[in-house]
Length: 454
Image (tube, rainbow, N blue to C red; front, side):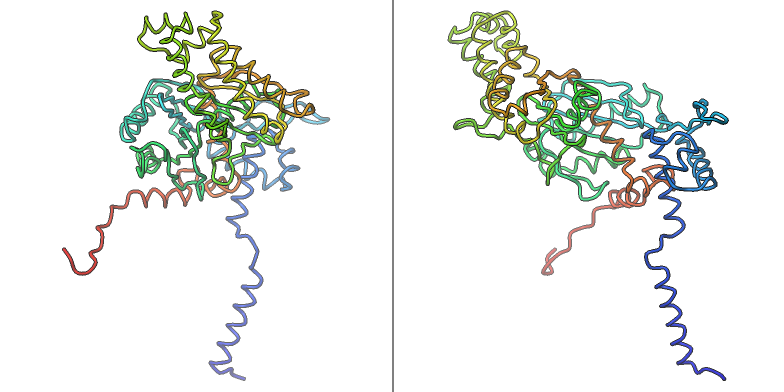
């Protein structure tokens, strides 16, 4: 019996609905392949599984799938076969290694008075670095032009593969991006930078993703991964940067704590009497007190430095303290105690294994560090301070670059982001990043005229 057209349309609709119900929630073949590629790359990269047998167990995929995914990763240049591993009753297995040299990461720390740049590999290892004086007050265009010039020079000097990302550290708080590649506004506190699309311009010129963090957060990561905290800080650490501004970085359970808007650790704004902390214990505050003491003759050493140089700085105060100048010793000890009083509540809350003190003020000597220790130990719970170490930074200016390299590594290989680019070969071909570049290259549309005016 023939079916009429209406019944045929109903039948087709029912069939399509049944097919839709069968496919709801089922991953597509491409999605499954990308997920398994990303999983196996991270297993190898992190050293969780380094042989085919280990990958089969860790990924819960069969031998054929593991072999296929490894072949793909090798073709992409991301993994390679290494030496034979230890035998466990049969033939020794061949080790699988991550190729950290497959691409380059560019890193930079822009501070109030300096620029640092470096080149790192995909494992987050800093290979070369360069530091030079600069002033944020030069304006964003001058800083951007200098950054691009330094990056180009370093790529030529290092003779490295093309970069996959830039990791940038900036002073002050850096807001969290809405998505991995979304540009973020930067440097609200510097008037000449207001509204300038610094990250967008850098992305356009370098044609790679730009990941931005605050300077103190990258310094914290650098010290935790490769400096004073490496292997000794346990899972929790506080890093405090003492310079013109004062801020802290918090590591909790081995992860940096950024806060809801990315502004965690702004302890320089804590109240100390009628002032904020950085107004009485920051580098500029110390330099002002030192200048007044030199002019009043309260410090022989500082008076001599003033006569010799025409001004005194926090560095002179440090030198004076190391030479036994009483005023300098007392000034740094008092500033240390003020910093320690601001850190004690953080220590009670986080219960860190270590507090690392960095920044230009930390380099003034032991008087400041002694003041910090005295206040933290006095104001914190005995259980918190029982095994707490308070030490000076081991990495100095390199900490921010090392931490920035860690930021880039973590962003590039974050499982969700990795799954988005692994089938395309690099983060530069991630669909979201391709769309971002296209949007940044679009010409600015003329404003629409309202009300029929010219």
